Image (spheres, rainbow, N blue to C red):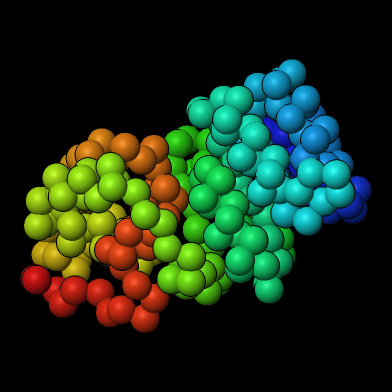
Length: 225
């Protein structure tokens, strides 16, 4: 059973999420909050496996709340909910430490999969808006000499894998592109996470765009490259 805290200022939205994230589907909603400030208290009280976080809220928005949650508990897992047109805010949420984002009007099964992935320590980037969100990083680069040093520790093959992670490909898709076994790709991904000191796929994507490994519009490497 995956424990969840719902954070949204609209009661109707929370009611819809409660319907999707019910115990028969393997979820247990432990608490709800109508703004980011209230969310901090609820998360500290119940320690959920995942926080489902809206962006636009009064008093404290989802970006600030995510940043505060991760500062208080680096192991916290946040899935940000979004609508179209919030790309710049979502990019900020990923930098704040969110483990992924999902459209509010996504099918129920996708939202369930997203919460499961985030709770399990993986990332979830909704492909419907992923490219537009990540494009925001080009306009707001990050300079981090230590990160550049860590990037230099990657092997050529690990760099290829990181580029494809940044393009949003799954391990199976990466394996097909690079003509590798899926188990080999999984090993490369684990080593990348360790060398770059990132905790999940979403953080690896952010790293790739922040440090110029991937640029919006850049085609993936050719199969066998």
